[in-house]
Length: 385
Image (cartoon, rainbow, N blue to C red; front, side, top):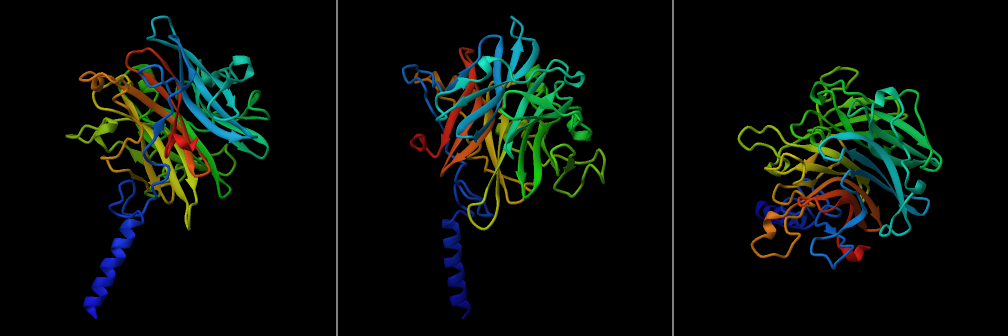
């Protein structure tokens, strides 16, 4: 009987492996599903140019487009994004605002509000910068969480049309008050789940240029009953109410591509999270897409986008290092012997699901400095469009 039991157990293990458990290329020992993970394909908007052109919106030498927040609402694709303004040297950030664009098909986009910003810094705590938005449609209104004051806090605003916003008198609604945050909270991703708002955000000190410093080094979590009053939590059960200042991030750099030093296990960038929830079968699947900083590039040019999955939104499992990041590109040119030295920087992902396919808007910069803007990628393939 024991022999038959062993055979049956072995057969069961084989079946489980085939269903996405241990050994699944894009799965995990917990059976994390593969859909929406990898591979991602950039949509080339101009195949006549050697460099891949996935841009839906393009910046210029003094305006850097980044941190898109992408939703589909009211029959339209909508994206709100940050415009970072630089001086003529391109070295100093003068400030930032938020702008919006819309599209009927997610391919051809038009700037909204006659191309003018939809949110500007006009409250003392915001300083000269508002950015890194998280857009949500709920109850016939648009809700927005955004970063102000160069990481000094996260504010909240509401709108009927996505163009005219009313900021909360309680702003900022989230401030850096945990030791790991190092006086920086940034890039919130917010969604409603079972009547509770959940926020994932980046924080923590990073070395590098000003744009790098504002990215953050790890990802934290908070929840709220109303989107205004937040409680920070971590995987060990600590909360900002019970353990002030001691709540830890839920995700930190742990893979070499994220910039972590393999000898010390320190350093690295994990920033700009985008969290989405699926319910494909009998449980919720939390999907987290994030920016990581590749080794050897201190100015956030050689960045890429990684993936982690969770069944509860607190305990996360990253895709194996062999398959993470899920979106990066080192061969945008077809020049033998040269292509491997030309890199793109992909960052700040925002993902929506349409049917059985996924679309991602993200910020892309090429190392040649020829073009920068908001770009489009799809999963599982371009036919999904």
